[in-house]
Image 1 (cartoon, rainbow, N blue to C red):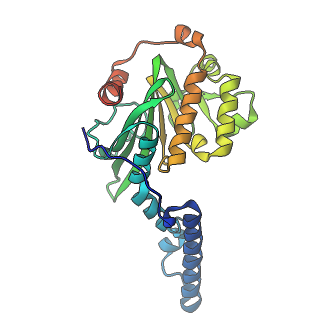
Image 2 (image 1 turned 90 degrees about the horizontal axis):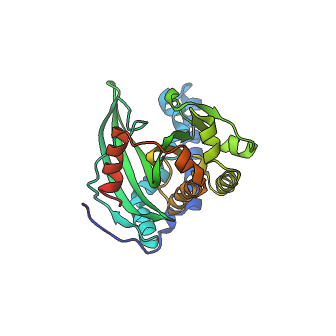
Image 3 (image 1 turned 135 degrees about the vertical axis):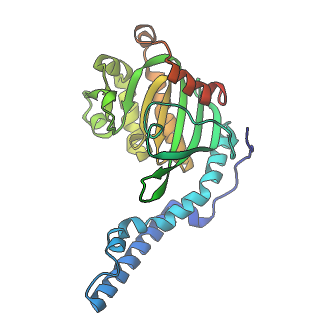
Length: 283
């Protein structure tokens, strides 16, 4: 199913967050100065496209370092937390009915750098998802880090995070202003959402969100009997820990009556996703 490797060892200094932040700032200053120098001598920018893209280009060196270190960081996290890590995982792509899995122009989905283990009482998994977007004019590459925690039973759909999917349901507000500012809950059943997010769960998520942006920057979905997290973060070990911790807080905080009052039969699409990720690779 893939090559199993271990983590360990210290990172080179150039992969540290402070060094990468410094490189990003220096790159931005250099690009701005170069654009200013060219505009002053030629009366126009070297390229409007380059000028507008300058803020994004400043992150390019840091992005290259993160890409180079990502597999090593994931392997180390797996080794430290008792997960089975597979660099060349042969996991099928789950057939979940939400983005990015439903993007019509997406091509060549690939599952990479997968690992499986347990988070608290729950079977859990992680994989790095890549794909190509075919916009007819150009082809661009994209990725997401995907986290999965198995729940004891299937529950109605619920999302946490910014979403443009109108089938998710309306946004549900809670009494905690701090929670509402950091986490956006959508459900077609507000009573179910309030049952899931108890005051204790809300307090735990808010506290976690204050420590790390990875928690509030991740979109979570309850799909069938799985809690799924999808994010562009999760490359660094502490980000992986934060996302899994947020999922554990949610799962542990679900009251007992929810499983009797709201548990639903698995749909066919949910079973396919569960088979693809959990029964075939994680359990």
